[in-house]
Amino acid sequence: MTVWIPGRLVQAGCAVIAMTLIVFASLHLIGNPIDLLLPPDADAAERARMIAAFGLDRPLALQYLAFVERVLHGDFGLSFVYGTPAVALVLSRLPATLELAVLATALSIGLGIPLGLAAALRQSSPVGQALTGLSTLSYSLPAFWTGLLLILVFSVVLGWLPSTGRGQTVAMAGGEWSFVTLDGLRHLCLPVLNLAVFKTALILRLTKSGAQGTLVADHIRFARARGLTTWRIVFVHILRTILVPIIAVLGVEFGATVAFSVVTESIFAWPGMGSLFVESLHTLDRPVIVVYLATVVLIFIVSNMAADVLVRLADPRIRTGPL
Amino acid sequence: MIPTLLGRRASGDGGGSAGRSRFAFCAAIALLGLSLAAVGAPWIAPHDPYDLARIDMLDGRLPPGSTGASGPYWLGTDEQGRDLLSAILYGLRVSLGIGIGSALAAAVLGTAFGLCLACAGPRLARVLARAVDLQLAVPSILLAMMIIAVRGKSVVNVFFALILVEWAYYARAAYAAAVAELGRPYIEATEALGVAPWRIVLQHLLPNCMPPLTVILTAQIARAISLEATLSFLGVGVPITEPSLGLLIASGSQSFFSGHYWMIIFPGLFLVLLIVSLNVMGDEISIRIDGSLR
Image (cartoon, rainbow over all chains, first blue to last red):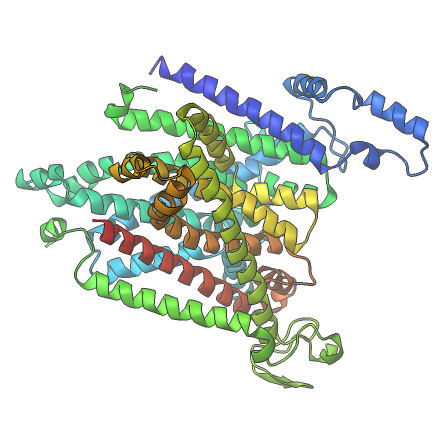
């Protein structure tokens, strides 16, 4: 383990360097900042002066180094729309997105694993088949449409839950959080449910196919021969075997959940960094777009590493294996 | 009772298999019907939703089943008075066309890349496989949104974005399948017979790599349709002149707080039916291939 973690850090570092290269290249693709910043009546001399001032006349490699230096100082530039540093702007929206993604992941684990076990243990019964069918359906539902349906049913028709905004928030640990107030929890219900639908179906499918494969394994047969109770077999022997792939997939999927909260945040007017990103795409607010993408890729790398550590803790066979 | 459940064979035989096949049959029928409806939209649609001269603003927001100036509207009308059923049929054309077209193009590109990778030396292959993994690490929706933000809204750009998002899945699968096949004796035998390398790849390697790629193709058509709908819903997809199902739902969502549920329900049901039947077909194909390989 002690040899392995630094190795992973080096890998993560390589991924971050690759990411800055891609971000830098896409910065150039989005368009020339001079065209946006220069007044329309400027002459050629003024244009040349501005290009020199931004360092855009230097070779691309030197521009990249200058970009990396600014990034290392945390300077991604000012938002064109808000006029404040892009990093501070995105970070101020981070707690809203994180609480959405974490709660949705927790809900999908809490629902997906028991339902998946039930579907595997009773696969020929109507309950098992209904669960399997339901998971295929939820796996296929486009998130934006389920979001609209949730609003239609719970907000418009029944009027039980609010459909926009975060509700009352409390300042804690450097951010505003909704999950600590009753009003905030009410506002969290629909967006979290919306974000969790796909993930729950995914975990249900994973758990079901894993458990089906494990049910016929020798160690389960021997456990039954030893006279262990069914509960013990299911929750200790089967669950431990199938937990490893589930953790690995969750690590990859957490980054995707953060990314897909773009859709949920847009529908429920949730003031997270995803809805900020959609706004920035429409206004072409370049620094904010770049910071948002960098943040998502960082979250992706960190959650992947965390999952790798957990997988190694859960599965002793990998711990001693090669990198 | 539960110990007998634990002891039962887990391969899905017995009652589950027949039910599953029936389900897959229904999915195939639905898929066929939707494809025919999409292809035949100009002939079977009761109205022409893009003929501005035939659209009456006074018929706007009529509920399903009502009759307006130019005949009955089975599924109601949208804000501009367009017949929703006709708009859905035309939207199905756009969604299905973009989904199938981009998935096929990505399949050809990705498979070619994967096969080349498998035939190249192991060192180059390892570096390039890392690049493919890196691309797969970027969430697809963000990549597609970036590309359309850079290049502007148009059907061609959505196409381009979807191909760029999807090709890596085929590349990885084709690479894995090809590496496994290359180690088999029949490849060695054809090499010993002096068959040209390009013929080995096209006539012997490619057909044997097809089964996993077919499964991915079906799943990826569904993914592409879903992703296109999501992009169009967020306003970074197809332009308003060629509305897909996603864009229909987006324009319907602007007025559904006032109870005009049909504008989001019906296009959504068609979209879900399309994606569900594709996924059910994909599952069925993968189960059958597994069965035939066993």
